[in-house]
Image 1 (cartoon, rainbow, N blue to C red):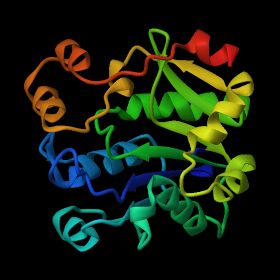
Image 2 (cartoon, rainbow, N blue to C red):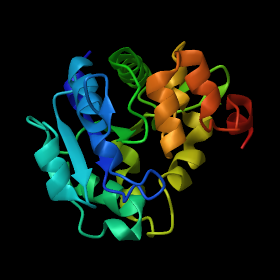
Image 3 (tube, helix red, strand yellow):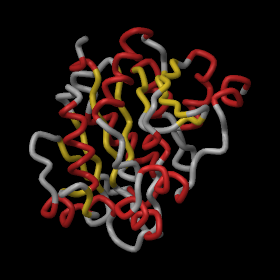
Length: 220
């Protein structure tokens, strides 16, 4: 499996306003959110990694070891996450990868094993999007084929990547995983405290999980 054809794109440009501090630098597993995500991408065999920073970009670069990743600073980060996604895709255009694995700094607990499963799902199917699923709920990260890159680049600032991804649900590859961490979305201090202080099952119950099930997604 040529995982080198998939590039990792990590979005960490937001202001982390609900957390009150930069999520990228929050301590986690003896490291930081952003370092754990990058390391798990490397451990899964993804060699080309772009990290998009914005708010407090200099502080994050100083505070995290991002060696081997290409850091892009999105000066338009206040326009929203879509602007960071587009900045990352542009940074990957020469040469253009077969697909991107889109990772959000809000989801630091996704394992390298899940990333490997998603890469395999993409290479087995070449589906436009490859999405992890835990007990009927879809999560993160997702693999997006390059056939959708231009649509993502054409999005307006108020439109999210999900605008494009949802249109592909009928053609998507849904990868079942036993890892509930694909559902963890760390936005607020309580989420973080429970993530680092509780066991996996209680951590899952403490954070927001998608209400939409896989069956709902396939019908849309």
